Image (tube, rainbow, N blue to C red; front, top):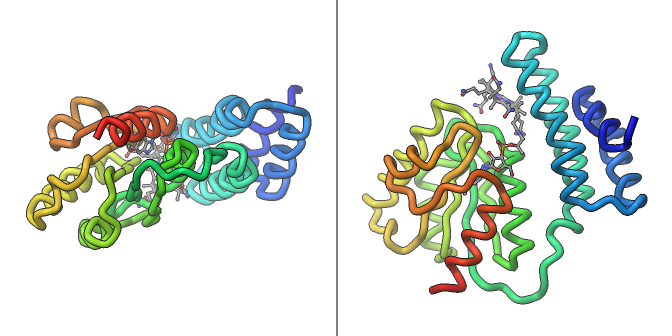
Length: 212
Ligand code: B1M
């Protein structure tokens, strides 16, 4: 079994100690951090999602797999963040209210930092009020709203609406993403950008900030 397949299996097993240790081994063998993420860790968490939706496993299994995945990503952080000392702009990022999924949002933060953006990570389950406070305090260029549930996608729309009502909507570009989110949805809720993955999100933010 290749080391990437071994990593996938460790995430599926929810091995919180084995996963970061194996990621380190892969790094030491000279594998690229993006390859480790995309071809080792991601297939594991995706398989967990498939098994969960088929009713083959339950929430506790998903939770330990997510912990293992996060522990693996932590090892890759310094390699993915890379970047330089220059800060080109600021982003405020969070997963919207009612949604606890933070792995994708964490990757977006990571990739944005690697694109030399300063990122204020508000965490998961973040209310519109907290977004508004953060916009007033940090004056970001872009605001990231992640949602992984079809139900919390609606919260992205409500949060944008709240930004409008608070008079801060025009001060920022709102970027939305997350597995169920589409360009069509982004247009409907009047977001400024939809990006399908973390690297694309970082690119969009970077290009926008540099074009200002
Ligand atoms: Co949940 N969960 N979960 N879960 N979970 C999903 C999302 C689900 C699809 C599983 C399934 O049924 N197949 C399903 C949603 C169904 C739906 O709404 N249509 C689901 C469900 C139902 C639930 C609960 C309701 C289960 C329950 O309690 N009965 C519950 C809800 C809790 C809540 O949030 N209120 C729940 C709970 C959990 C855990 C807490 C156990 C755990 C999360 C732990 C954590 O995040 N710390 C969890 C997990 C791990 C998953 C799956 C298996 C994996 C999600 C993930 O991290 N993927 C997921 C199934 C799946 O997605 N395959 C599932 C890896 C991550 C890198 O991908 O987040 O998509 P993702 O991010 C991508 C892109 O989407 C994009 O970039 C990343 C790639 O580079 N991206 C952005 C993300 N955010 C972005 C923002 C941007 C741009 C791009 O802004 C610009």
